Length: 132
Image (tube, one colour):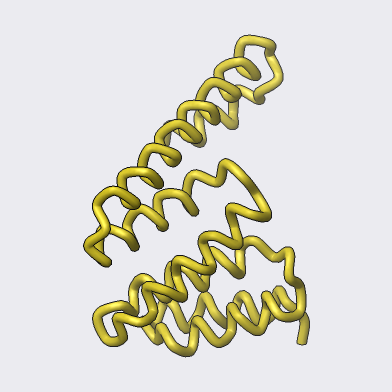
């Protein structure tokens, strides 16, 4: 079984709200491919969703999101996840720090998209899909 297979099994567990099962599958995928950013996104989201049953999972979500940031600085979703986790931990200052990073990264992404559009490097059909 490869990392993609494990990742997709993790998505199936996630869809069934089996947070622990999803985390296990995503972690196994990341163990096979330590640069598999989507696996860390899976770990972070499943851990965040499972926080009510096990508040310690917030720390797992934070570590996974930080791994994403290390692999892909500027990842808006990772920053937003970190912000959400710190909100639930009651750390307003750290939550605001990561929330601001998410906002700025989102603006940068938008500016890059706008520039590509102005330069004609975006397929108009791609724009239509984003709007629908």
